[in-house]
Image (cartoon, rainbow, N blue to C red; front, side):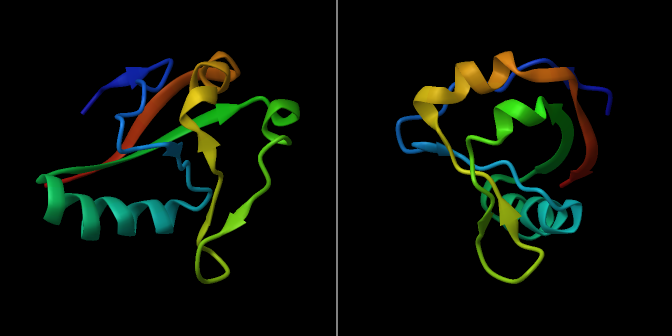
Length: 95
């Protein structure tokens, strides 16, 4: 699948936080084991964000040592999107 984007869509009302994960294996587990079961499909993306901008979001350990993510409040997503470098690439797809 060749879908590339330059920004993330606004969060839904029940999604107050955007959670980009920092480990591809963790992202694969979420997409394959959670999203497929609940939504019928799961996608893993890869993108870059300016390092200086990202420093405002401390890395959160959401479980084991490799379960790392950032917690970006939904109201800051436009600012986050403005600091994405290049495109957002889909690197894995599960159904």
